[in-house]
Image (cartoon, rainbow, N blue to C red):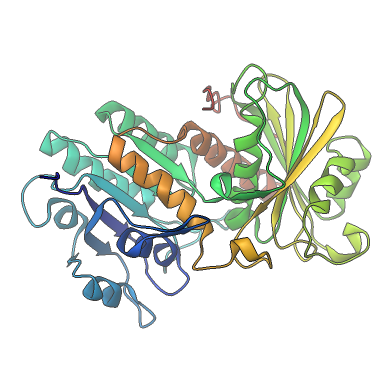
Length: 377
């Protein structure tokens, strides 16, 4: 007789067509579209909590179609209306919704508030379950570090981040552990806060494999406009590597980057071991993400491909989220994170420092608190 499937609760800010809830939750209900076909879920979605329900909501209909109860509180969703934790995994999807913005133009999603309640249920139940937090942990380092520390204190397996580190790469590229990387850049598009995280995560998931492993970040500077091109001229980031990364992206206009990108952004990341990496936002020039590095004098580059950018193998129901979701499901099954949450913790801190720099006239922000050391696997 087979054992009952592990049960998962989805704690969601807002659920509408194309939202992060929409591209993650249905996969745990209907299956994961992959290069090898549709893989059936191995866990059961047992409950949902929706923080905000607007006219465009589809979460209630999805729940009804699949007989998933929607509870009016996080506590009841985790206990299945009982007194103790009754699920074996938690999807914390705190993306989208009607929330305030801070002075750095970051939307104040209630991820830490959700995490406090989730951890409270687990602490009082004397039992924990793995948690996946979608995207970065918080808008600020204090809350992000609290989430990380509280999970560690309670012994909760924790994963976080976006689909980018586990999506398709064209051509395939992954540095061997302890690769002597000389310099690296990641390229992307869109807004600094909302997509800067994705570009930083592409950068971090690659450079964390450099020689000596990750030791943290000592300073961050965020430049915008003409200052970005001047910084390249001054040798602060490599134009050659940026062009090599962009060359892997098929869908872009001809001509120089400057001709199509009137408002570039550069996040200059100074690591504690002396390494330097750069996250570049070339909005209107590219609509995909890419990476390039110089290793022993040789340039290597790849596109990080996502849904909807014109490549046949990425088409489908947001299939790039399948590989993220499958990694999360594996953690729910085994209790072991598929990759280090420290990557997202560090990237969260770098992004906050970048937003601070940007709102303070591109001040170089020293970050002694970002002494996040870890080993990639």
